[in-house]
Amino acid sequence: MSDEHLRGIPRLWMDGVLDAALAAAEHLGDPRALDRYRTLRLAAAREREQDIA
Image (tube, rainbow, N blue to C red; front, side, top):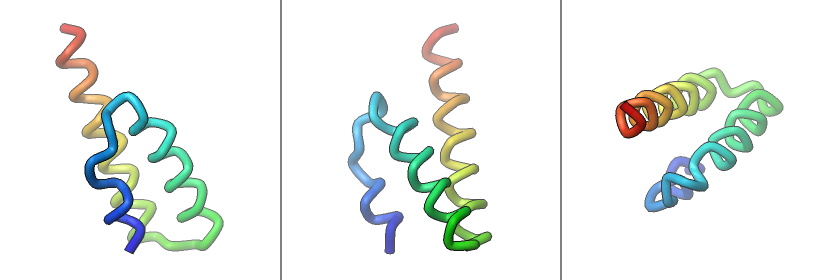
């Protein structure tokens, strides 16, 4: 599954990878993957905001 490819990716690269994963999920019409990747993107954004604060 594509989620396996996201494990171990450094945070600096995560945004670009998640954007590509979201685009692929949208293209394939995979609602479960879209939900998963959106959740990951929100978590990454929250973590980034905490690091800045």
